Image 1 (cartoon, rainbow, N blue to C red):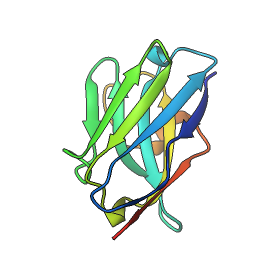
Image 2 (tube, rainbow, N blue to C red; image 1 turned 120 degrees about the vertical axis):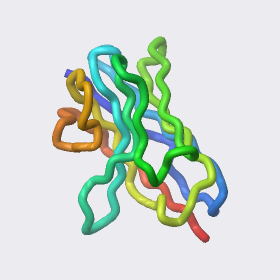
Image 3 (cartoon, rainbow, N blue to C red; image 1 turned 180 degrees about the vertical axis):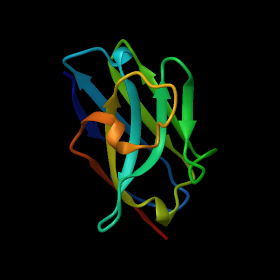
Image 4 (tube, one colour; image 1 turned 90 degrees about the vertical axis):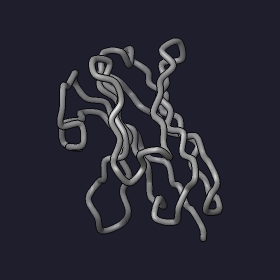
Length: 124
């Protein structure tokens, strides 16, 4: 199995940028579909972006054009570059790893492994 550790979350002002990292150990990321989700208290985990080695990248409409998911196989790390941040992006961001998929990337229950989360706070 794979272990995931997120980092990079912090407090920023609206319009700013952050890059989140998800470092994997135990197995190569190339064996998984990787995704970022986010969650605020009292709400279900929300899909942000996914990276499938078969089909490429997928984004939630709310972040399309502002966020970019990428991976560095040599470092076994997945990234989420977040630009033009808005207060509504405030959440705990989680990295997830699931089996190879060809769709339904936004369903959080399809991902078997999760990191501990990293807090992103965007102030007006």
